[in-house]
Amino acid sequence: MFLDEISIQTSIAIYAGLGFLFLLGFGYYFFLNPLNKGQSFSWKILLGSIRGLILASLFVAILPFKIFNKVNLNELVQYIFVVDFPDSLTKDFDRTFRKADSVLKIKYPEFKWVDFNGQEIVDFKRLSPFSRSLIRLNQTIRKLSKGQSRKEIFILTDGNLNDLNVDLVGNIHLIPYGQIINKEQIEFSTTNLPIFSVPSEEVHLPVDVWVKNFKRNRNVIINIDVDGTFLKKQKISFDTDHTYLIIDVDLSSRKLGKHKIKVSLDGVSKWIDWNVVNEKATVYGFSDALDPDVGVLNRVAKNKFIKLIWNFDVNAKISDKADKFIFMRVLPKEIYKIKMINSSVLFLNTSKDKTSLYFKSDHHAKMDGESLWDVQMKEFQATGTYAKTDSTMGALFDNLFVNNTLDSLNKDRAFVDDLLNQDQSVNSLGRNDPKLNFLANKNNIDLLEIDDLATADFNLEEQNSNFREESVYVWQNNYFKLWLLLLILTEWLIRKFRELR
Image (tube, rainbow, N blue to C red; front, side, top):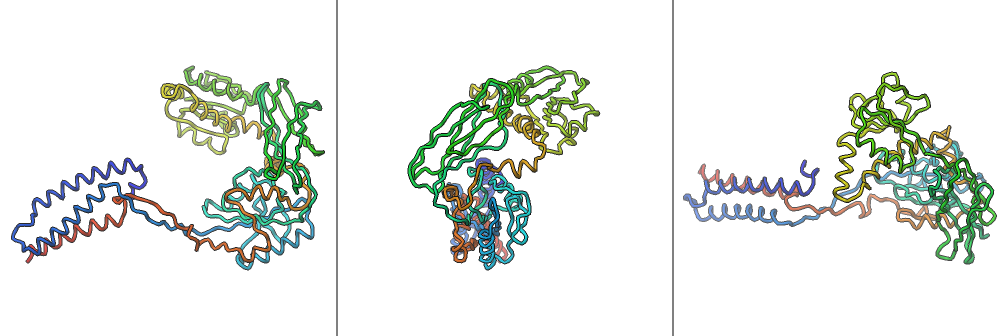
């Protein structure tokens, strides 16, 4: 029903108005058709009872009673089977892979294995570029599931994964493999992508550290060097309750140029590129007039360390090096159409029909409606700040101008997705229990040993969780509406039958 698609407050108002009109009409009907026009006592009792039921039902509907319905969620479950290939393929891994395959085929004869990149595994061989990033796996799951909400994902893994803080979509069952190595070992991972900042800006370097095969409480020192010079150290402590730790290392520099960060601990080190630049992006703005919206955009750009250069001459020539633009109430000249399609562009309050041809990639955005100045002044009058306006525009600037600038520094995006997002720190062979246990503590992830595959039950269609209780008001229930309609029709048919006699 269309009223189910609008807010409860609006639907209540509509139903109240319709109910009032209905009661007026029904009262008038009672007035024209009283019960004392020569009917027998039995007919009066019958008609009076039905009319009483109608009025009682309407009274119940007016009160805020609720009915609880069980909604069946028996949507088909999609099963996805993923292989996390180890750093080096061994006979032990091959045997484990084939064993898991043979056990699962008993329950799922039609299933297929895929890798983290979504490529189907043929003859137990790795075909696509190597990736052990959960960010990449998340993208693959979304692509394979095609929007289906109920997913069960089985991942054959030794636990040497990256990006562990990513929230995976669906219910995850980790099938561990690999030799359990008893030697205690400190391992860590951090970003492989270059870090960009402006002078004196504080950046946060994420470092994940864990103890493999924990045996005793201990302290570990993380040393940070920049350009071969010691910068700082940070101590972390491990105990039985904390064998996997995530920390942020704060860095800032006033010196422009390229720097090298060295992160080292317990004999293992990692190098990261750090670029300190004057601004994170240069954006060229075009407008038909200087107005308050220009000031709003300038403030947001300054807070985001973006250099915004304005030009109020629509016929001005655009530099060949420029690739980021804002057009406010104006459109680029026809000769620059191809350049705009390949650039990052924000259109503000421009013609929808004329800008539609530019939206062929994620590098274009459009905003229409009130002026930014009016929006921020309304916010300031209500809250005393510009926080919401600045946050909204800042996120747009980040996505449109800053992130695209950093992406353009990587010539091969496929290579970045498949390799650079991976952890390049040394992953020893064998099963990584600290990482597996860390993941298993998340709500939608569990560990499923290979020996338990044959007895595990994943026939989710039969579980009670497929039903959800939903509450609706009495007057929203379709059966109540049908009941009321039947009472009215019954009363009318009885009265007509009496008149015909």
